[in-house]
Image (cartoon, rainbow, N blue to C red; front, top):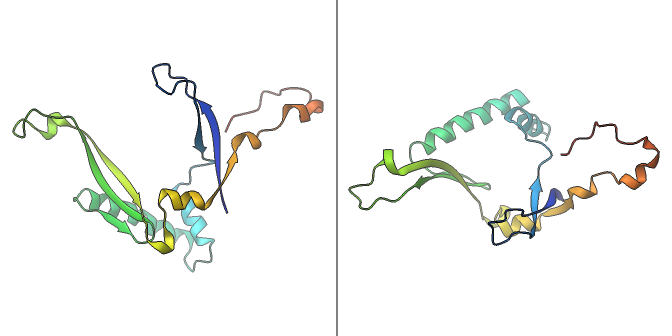
Length: 157
């Protein structure tokens, strides 16, 4: 089963209605770039080398952006749909609305697929994961009695 790391943090924003409450946050071990993902795919019994997979992924990326910038949604079967949304401020009338004045951002969004065989909806994705607190990965200071103290070389993930 997949293992999702998380840490629990307290909301310290005094202006928030949920000030003082504790929330879980997902933690990533690393960011896989395209080259690392290509290598990983090639290691899964693929007949293609990592260089070939990398080339396909790079072409996918550039074509995805091209299609999105041409007002198309891109559905990847078994994964989900990429699409764009606008972030804009309101205008007092349709005639007073202008892209230059009102559009503040253009965002790429992703909607996970919900086909039965590979449902990636939030509820189904949750069922497929095992959660591990990041605190379980940190060494227990009481068990490191003979270590000679803090060597200053520790970094937080």
